[in-house]
Structures are given as structure tokens and as C-alpha cells.
Image 1: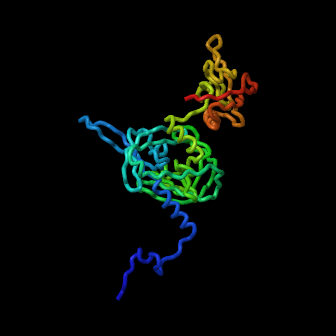
Image 2: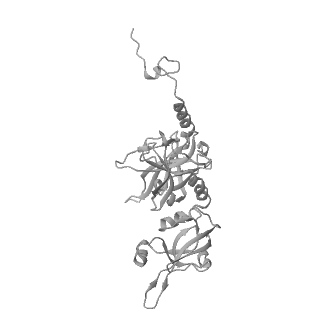
Image 3: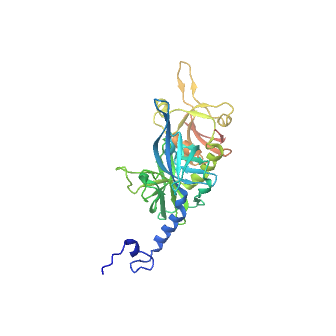
Length: 343
């Protein structure tokens, strides 16, 4: 009698068709089983009114996210929640929970949602202690590409320290590049190491086709671990500044051409910049304008434009004192400035 075997029976434990898993396979399965419950599906909803004044909830985008804590905080990308009025978070068991936006940082493409019910179902992701990542180490991405929930892909860290322009137009620096397949819908999902610890948040891809080309980028855990607690506590990021306004790129070019640096427009009276002696634009007789100080460096960081200045300050915190390198009348000068919270 001919006996037909199903694939499941062929691969069952003890079956002669079964084979031992490789150590790397066992590791991937272990990480997925341990971390997948921390990954959620995020739906961005726009609330509108129909011509009959009925309230309509229209899904306008989806992405991924991960559970940060048992208090109900969910971390995702800013561009996943951008423009939304309401949000739905779907857990691995298909439980749908309503969420609200707690805070966001567009410059790092990070946002925090919060669910008010169902916290007992949440399993927070394990956050890696920030340490030196290495090119070549294993990466595991879990997310919801094209709406296919809890999809796992694996790869390696392809490069570190990448600079990618974020959704805000500001360069996000120190990004992780990975070849783990990342597709639309993966945004906001966790990038994990071989221990199942969070090392980054999958954020964007380089592609010419719209699909994965093996070049994905993740916001590093060092940014996430610093920014998320601030968003939870304040609803915004505490940023250091010194009390100045600067010229736009076009205004700067009109005044000094394409020379590198940031031209100071105005200095806030009584602020750190004013106390340090920084000077803004001066109005001359006849309506002419004399350039203000040109910032060309902050400590060891070269400043060529606003993007450089922003990212230089992003490495400090309010209360830090920095050496501001400027040009005044064509001559170099260094000023000591103590940064303050500008929010």
C-alpha cells in the first residue's frame, strides 16, 4: 500500500527526513521567538468628516514599531505617524489597541506612541547597552513589510557611521547600514543583534526599484536610548543652543558667496551667544549690510553649513561649554560659549 507523507510529517522530530539545525539557524529561531512579541504593526489613521458630518477614520499609512516598556510606550519612526490624527497598534496575537502620539523628533525620525489599555499584553524589547558595533556582525530585522506582519530577515552590519538625509531635511549621522532585507512597512521595526537585543530601528532603504536592494539604514540604539526617555518625559527633545538666528543658504550666498560656515543673523540679548561676544549682522549707512560673525567650527567639529552646526550641537547637552570657532572681518577667533536648553 502506497503511503503519502505530508511535509510536516517528513520534518517532524524523530522523522528520518528531519535534520539537525545549524547553530546559526538555531540562533535566528531563538531570537525570533524571544523578540517577535515585542514587534507591533502601526496604522496611521486620518480622522475626517463626510458631507453628512459623519466622522470617518481613513487609514493613510502603516509601518512597524516595538514595545519600549510596560507602561504602554511604543517606539516607531516619525515618518510612520506623520500627519496622523489617531493610531492603531496591532500586537502579535492580532489584538488592536488605540494609541496616541506622545512626542516625536523628526530630525532623528523617532516617535513615541502610547496605548492606554492592554498594557498587560505588552512585552518590551531588550535594549542593548551601547557598545562598539562591528561591521560583519549579524543583524536580524523583524517588521511588517507590505503589511505582512512579523516578517523576519537576516543579514550583517554592512557599514557604520553612514550619513543619510532624514525626513526633516537634516542629515542623520552615525546610521547603521545593513543588508538584512528592509522593505516598505519595515520602517520603525527593530534591528536586533544575535542576542536579541535592540541595536537600531529600521528607517529607510536605498533603492531604485522600490524594493529592497540590500542597502538598508537603521537609527542606532545610542540615539534611541537618549531621545525616547526625553520624548516620554517632555513630549519633545531637550536641545542645546546659544540664542542666535542665522542666515538661510540663499541669504548667505548673496552676502558672502559660497564660503563655508554659518553666518550669524541676530544674537538674542542676554543669551549665551551675547555673553560670549558673538555678533550678528550690522546695518550700515545707506542701507548696506555688513556680515555678522561666521561660525566655522564647534570644538573639533567643522561647520560648513547649518546641517553641520545642528549635528555638532547634537553631540552636546545643555550646560556644556564649547569652543566656538568663528571668522570676524576675515580673521579667525575662538569664543567660549555655555549652551542652554532652547526648547
